[in-house]
Amino acid sequence: MRWVGFLSMPAAVQAQAFSMNMLRFGCSQLSIDRIDPLVEPGNVPSAHVHQIVGGDAFNASMPMADIAQLATCTTCSFDQDFSNYWTANLYFRARNGSFKRVPQMVNEVIGPANAGITVYYTAPGPNTVTAFKPGFRMFTGDVMRRTPTNLGRRVQSCYRCYDGPNFQGNSMAPCFDPQRDTEHFPTKPCPGGIRSSVIFPICWDGKNLDTPDHKSHVAHPVDGPASFALVDGRCPQSHPVKIPQVHYEIVWDTRQFNNRNEWPTDGSQPFVLSTGDPTGYAQHGDYVFGWKDNTLQHAMDNRCFGATCRGLTTQDFSKANRCSVKPAVREDNDGWFSELPGGHHVM
Ligand SMILES: *[C@@H]1O[C@H](CO)[C@@H](O)[C@H](O)[C@H]1NC(C)=O
Ligand SMILES: *[C@@H]1O[C@H](CO)[C@@H](O)[C@H](O)[C@H]1NC(C)=O
Image (tube, rainbow, N blue to C red; front, side):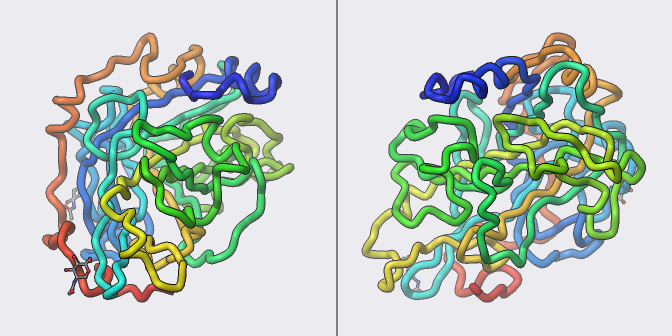
């Protein structure tokens, strides 16, 4: 574990963190596209733009099947992981009202991935969780939210303003530092970029691979959502099966947008999600399970930590970066736009 300042964490948290089983690995960009097989299956284009990583079985109408059998490659570092992970994109809104997509950069430690997402799977210890089943999918977050949850260290969505290059400011576990992690976008320019963290629930009903709202088959522990650093809590009777905690980290490379002279004259910050949210509270994540056979269960039961795991193999990022899916919606993602793709109003 290489969080700078980790040793400043409370002793109980350190002890817990060192007994955790935690995979943490990079996944390069698979595509940027306006499709959403989870929330809007078959819709081309879907409502807003996403950035997607993982296996190449991803498409607008991918079946609820064992996608590890359908995929031929993955952008994730573990060869066995054909899951798909995606989130909304971030845009900069200039003073003249034009928008530009904020690119992503590679997260600390993880290596030469191309943009993408750093993915975590965490369990309190070996043999404490049940891995997902083929076809399992879920959604976390609320695209309509414009207010904080005020869950303190249990927040499931947060931002970290990196103070300087090379991810300075990356001390303490994600979403665990009330001084640095906010549920809203940072209010000042971030010289090293902005990190997004998105955390999923850890309890499952044990029956449904999905539900109409893509949320009700999973739940938080009875005492509230599990923080990232202490993945624990008792699951409710309705959702008795403890599953790995899935967690995404995305680092938005805001450096080209840090000139205050281009920021809004009213003092507000200029970034918006592709859904039109200018607050950041509506950050969300989509997940489709796709680990081959029982490899995820194996990793969660065998004291795996970080980006390597005995019994699993990793691929070189030069290979991972060659895996991609052609966008279903052919549109420019990199110019200046007079409106957000899909015409979302900022509100
Ligand atoms: C999506 O993928 C599935 C299987 O991998 C295939 O059957 C289906 O035709 C694909 N759909 C689209 C829209 O490409
Ligand atoms: C709007 O502002 C941006 C940033 O200053 C600039 O690059 C872009 O060309 C402008 N667009 C229009 C239509 O003036």
